[in-house]
Length: 477
Image 1 (cartoon, rainbow, N blue to C red):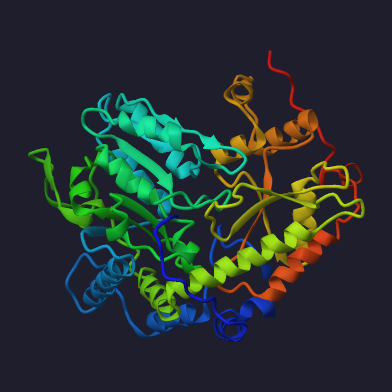
Image 2: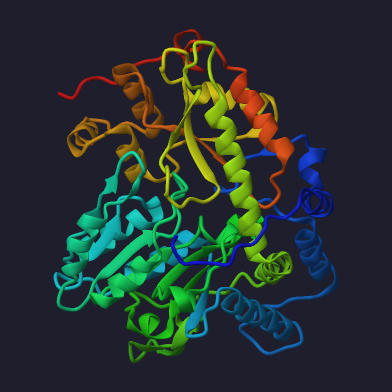
């Protein structure tokens, strides 16, 4: 991220303690040390209580009507829509409520007018819900292209990107990349949006990992489409996301079907329909009217705290965690932690992906770390985090090696693939991920550092792999 913001001091420890006590006391009451904010936020009590009070005091009916129960439901949905556009600085946009961020991405993928002249360009650093858009592009005759990553920082290869952006096709294609990697936490330069648009590209910006702890001004960013995950921002509602699209870009999409709530006129006899313009033409069926009001509560909470202060708090917590990891050493002086991605001068968010190393530099199996963490009430994440491009770049897995697995009679699932790579290479495709967030405090970080310290001077071979005896995959015929 390179859009400049004024220097804001992080929330003082007293303010974090007050917030933790008022809205996140259930973390301490349950003995939790939570480090999976990139996977999901934690629901603040005032949001839970606000939506509970609404549900217990108001009768809400299906908004597709005009009666005493439908009218308040409609107003609550539209109030949330206005709040979303205001919060994300989107004055020239439409807000389409979806089931989640993945559904928002699918709306763009299935309706974008791909062709040989309108290609798809993806960064290698993308969530699978973005990677999946390539299947829609192929079916329309477009060849997906990929911007490679630079290792070990896992930044986009700017030289390669410049060349690919220059070839936008005669009609202008779609370029999709994340504002912040859900794998490495690396924040990619937001000026790439403007550069791509100058070359004629429409831009799809994945903000799911970025929005929970960074101010978002879509008017300034200029992206044509942005996907939002509300539960990643404040823990709930889990069944509501959003596509925020520039009005002109949304009008260009060509929906492959219609559904209830999306048409202003339809006839079976005449075999024809007219799609409702704007956001209504993209909200299939009945909106999640009972849960959408929680979005307003959540955004109001973040607005009260100020996103600049949230950002500063998360940045400080990330710096503290990275600093502590960097100081951990085995008795022989070898480092205990290897951080994946980022580095000097690389912008990053609150996601820290890492390996635990033994005194000889060998990787300790991720599942052994996660199991010990769980026993201590620490929520870590392991895997490839639905971002295979970053994992392959970080682990040096090239197209030839990965293709060999798909050529097997029964292609392996991820865990089998991971085990096979551990046996063949002494390291898997997976990694460990710790992500900090709005409620992270110093005690959380100390607990995670203590967990890592508990592996000091332990050999990876002695720790082994949890679960069943390791087995390899049969060789390809």
